[in-house]
Length: 212
Image (cartoon, rainbow, N blue to C red):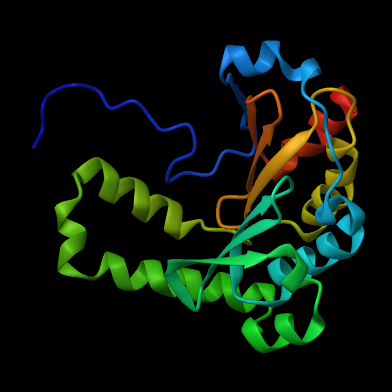
């Protein structure tokens, strides 16, 4: 139904924005009390380099295209191209066991994963349910899918993984969780002050250079 009102684009939507860099303020009471809350190290902190090496492997070499890293509680959520509507929850301690990783996650190269995602969208565009979308959405999807690029730049992804420990070890406002999405090349980072930073993989380097 067309209401005649202009539609405001989502912060992260069906398009790709290499210049995306936005902050979302959290609960002010949490922000004001951040220095009164004592931090304790956990299993993730004690094994962060090994865990991040596994996470990079999952993103580059398996069906995982989106991963949520719970640095405070060790909860790792994954979304895979092999089961695209499902979200799996893993414990960080399990991902540190090679047999668990190799037996659980289907292997696929990054370029093949990109091609599979394109086929999914091609199938959707030719299904009758696609007509449920407004003309604006259909046109936007068609335009995006025509120019869909590589899922992400591998160098940018490696840079992100390499610098997560630095954000975890910031004095005061340290990283609590991170969401890495290959499909639209974004990373969302939540800090202990309850604030969130959302940006493209490309902009992450600029963020690190300015704040770390």
